[in-house]
Length: 512
Image (cartoon, rainbow, N blue to C red):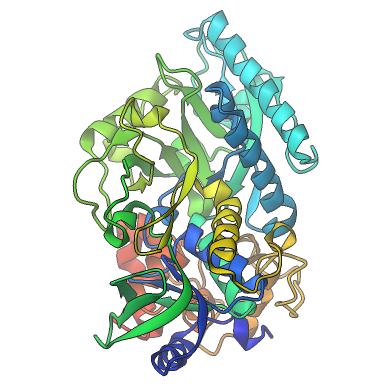
């Protein structure tokens, strides 16, 4: 069974809060439990530092759960001349796919259909881009057995991969591959739990305020109790909310919206239908096959000024844009009646003061406030490990922290085959969906179950079992029913499915 130090749950949270309130020593306090904050906690813990990571909500509550579930190789940034971020993205993608999380990130085929409306020059640009992507993959050292080379395919093969593609005038397709996450929120949970496995303290529903370079006030969101914590370094990794911690920061959020469909609406595709956006260079709309029998269609890049909402909402204009664009490549048009759900996330872009948000650099920056708080802003999910290494290197230098060099490049996460946390062997009778979500840890989910009917689906037609709900609470830090339904599983992306499983989730939740 998995060692207790890799299990996040309510009992451990209570003990950790009590230890902190009693004055436990801390080297690094990280504010923010998204992919960046969790990545920093893992980096710090594996360098031998005493680290606490807090979030006022749940793990992956913000932007980290609203992505396209892709680990991009950086091709788009190469097209705009940003060779540095393109190369880093390709390198980090390869690290995730071969070392950190091969159980969570797999090759996703992307098909650009060659339709009559696509001019020769546009076809040449896409093909050139795909060849450049192949070069990036080779440069990053990612083998073709992990990410196959791009190629042209026949019309018949294109229709086999994406069955609802327009057949009239179809002249085959261009096929390339990128990394796809089974789920972004699952990656955050795996990173946070691996950090805990190495000694990090991970605390959700704990708000941080009055942050300086060495002190933070923490407030338990359930009890309302507050206390101050002293740390040798305080790091702000709150993404689009970074200015709440350091008011001098200037961010320019942009909204990325996705629509959720039953996979049957796209003929149960095995590749992502990739449709060029008219009038744009190297920007596409993707219809991506996902877990739970769904397809996600995305994405937009729209300015999102004003107050930052806890849960951003798609606009009707964005929904129409996505439908109109994908319909140019479909034999039968989709409408809003086919949409089962929708979600939107805000990119934490650095405000450069000019241009469209689609053209704003996805680079990150590490900024020290007047009070000494270190903030990491900007960046993208694919580069979370590199960002964590960068900000920790800075903290180690500035605060003379007693740290060893970064180890995360070769660090297998919980569920990866090389992680020592799972000692229950995988067997052929395990549900395929369970192995896809948990990797080497899948057998632990059932072995650790104490609930009745652990292998029973939580609702008819949904391939999540009751043991997964229990495991979310006993091992993955879920405290509320919302945590279980909306973040540890992604059932909540479809409101009707969410309603069907919420009472089951409440059976397992420890807080409401």
